[in-house]
Image 1 (cartoon, rainbow, N blue to C red):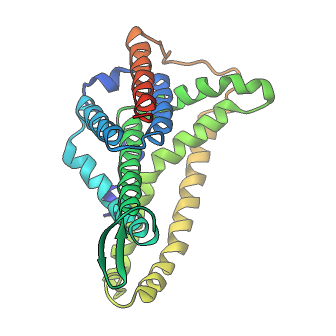
Image 2 (tube, rainbow, N blue to C red):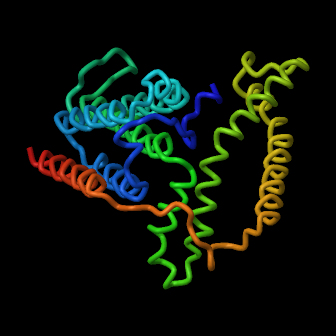
Length: 266
C-alpha cells in the first residue's frame, strides 16, 4: 500500500498539463483548492468532480495509477463520511432504526466533505505528477521571489519544499522494506487487536529515522561537494517562460471558480 503513494512522483508523458509552466500550475491549483471549498450544492459538486476527472484525462496519467494512489486515503474519506452521518443531527430523518438515525444534513455534509477531499488530493497530486522536481523548485522560487524584500529566503524555501516532495516516495519505499524485513523476523503487522498493531509499528520509527538522517547527510555532502552555496549569485540553465497557454489555463481556473461562486446562490 505504501508504494502506491503518488504525492511527489513524476510521470513522464506528453500532455497539455506537462507543457504548462510550473508557476501557472501552482497558481491554478491554489485557485482550485480555494474554489472547491465554495461548492455547497449537488450541481456544484458534480461540476467539481467532472472538472477533476477532466484534468486527469488531460494529464494522460494512467487512471489505474491514480486510483492506486487514492486507495490509501479512501479509509480516511470513509471514516469522515461516517462521522458526519452519525454526528450531524440536522434536517429531516432519512433512516432510523434504534440508535442508528441518519439525517439529511449529515448525508449532505458527509458526501460534500468526501468529494472535497478526493478532488483536492487528485488535483494537487497532478501538479507533482506532471512537473519535474527541478521545474517545481524553479516555479516555487519565482513565486516566492517577491517575499525576498521582507527577508524570506525564497530559493532555500523552494528547495526545501521540493526535496520534501521528492523524498516522500523514497521514504515510503524505505518503510515498506523495513516492514518486510521485520515481518521476515516474525513481526505481525496485520493481525491482533488494534492497540497491538500500533505497538508493532513503533519499532519502525528508529530505523526509519536513522535512514532519513543518513539520506539527509548524504544529500548535504553531495550538494557541498558540487559547490552549492545557496541561491545568491546562482544562474539558471533552464529558464521558465510564461506562454499564452499558461494565461489561458489560469483564466479557465478563474472562470471555473466564478461558475462555482454563482452556483452558491441557486
